[in-house]
Image 1 (spheres, rainbow, N blue to C red):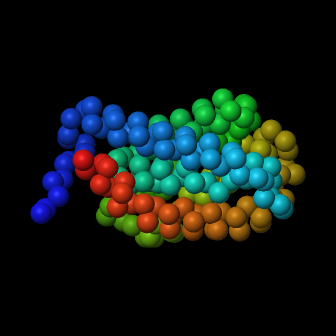
Image 2 (image 1 turned 90 degrees about the horizontal axis):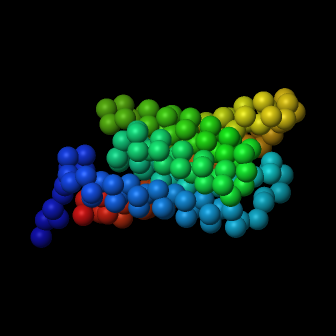
Length: 177
């Protein structure tokens, strides 16, 4: 039996809003889960694996740039409410810039990288934006973390790209209900 597919952007508004709400809730749940993880040695305070970036990467490719940016902003507000102003600034700047980069790399006609490459590009961009914010707040000394964060970005970007590849069929199924 053939599965019935809907055009997400032309379907009922309530279905779109519900699905975007589900994506936002998933992003917040993954952000909350990351807060429970212990800090990793040799990394700056607050370095996380970026699991919620799976959601923004999916949104950027599956539902559009606008909703993906809203989800990134929602994650930033959540960081601010749960961890303070500095976390809000770093999460929002990193999230918005990395979402823009991932959306550019995920354009349908020009996909120079697979999901792992896009995940790595998003992680590197996220870390670079956060370093810029940290540099404004704490001074240039934070740039010494750059080599560690680049290695970490390659590892976490690979992880998020692979996890999106695994979860993509489930997300697509939910979107097409």
